[in-house]
Image 1: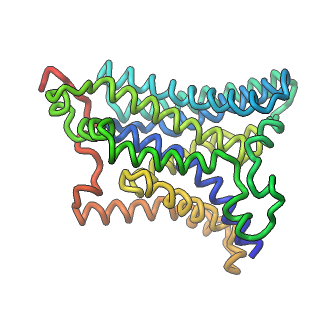
Image 2: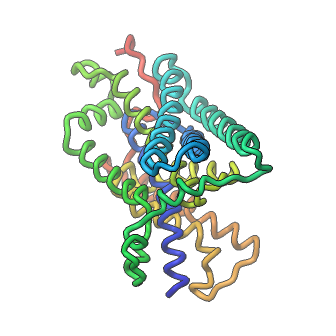
Image 3: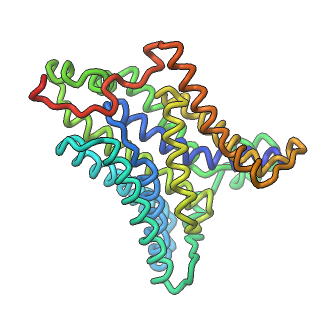
Length: 330
């Protein structure tokens, strides 16, 4: 039972990182833009959150400051990545796939270099930790109440960012489905020319959706560094891989925010299945472990095949996804 709880709690935190990235990308893709720069924006959020937390700890112990500033910095860094993407794809009409991939490399490069620079500038060789900020972000209801029963460990033992992700998903669902803003955004994703003719400001909606989506993705990086890694600055490859899992989750969730909640946890359980194989009395060698880690991507491919065969409109991506809008062609 203890091993299962450990596997579950690790998967929930790990899955939340993916969930933030997927929710940000779902919002972006609802506007008709395919942003493959999610790994870069997650990385930017991780770097900004870690750097701000680490530097603040040298000057203050105020828990409110240590809580709010890294949160703002991570969101702003991810939003900046979205703004860069918007400038090239919305204003300059650059190719969305190429721009997204370039943003990924840019974000990973800046984050990797910046993180190591902060570590070494502080006098450390290769590793530093924002321990005080991490402890604030990791505080949970179970810890504060001294609860140790299995239910509390499985559902009440997480920092607020874990629950915030679920709140964001629910709010996004409500906005997209129940409000005029959501209707306008979805109409732009389906047919920007029709939305433009109806008087909807296509450029504004595309900019806002991508910038806010980038900010949400940035919170995934903050969750990874301050909660999953407990404030430590870890390797670049780990964060980037989560960004690509988030992109896969968008397809798996069929562009529905609520599906991203349980889908992210499922992805995390599958991804870390090999490290917790003892729960099922299984053992994997190196090759088998690599194959097991492919399960989230394999499941995504199967879902993509399934929804393609069914050809149900509600399970398909926005009709204008990946296509730039040229107003003069309207």
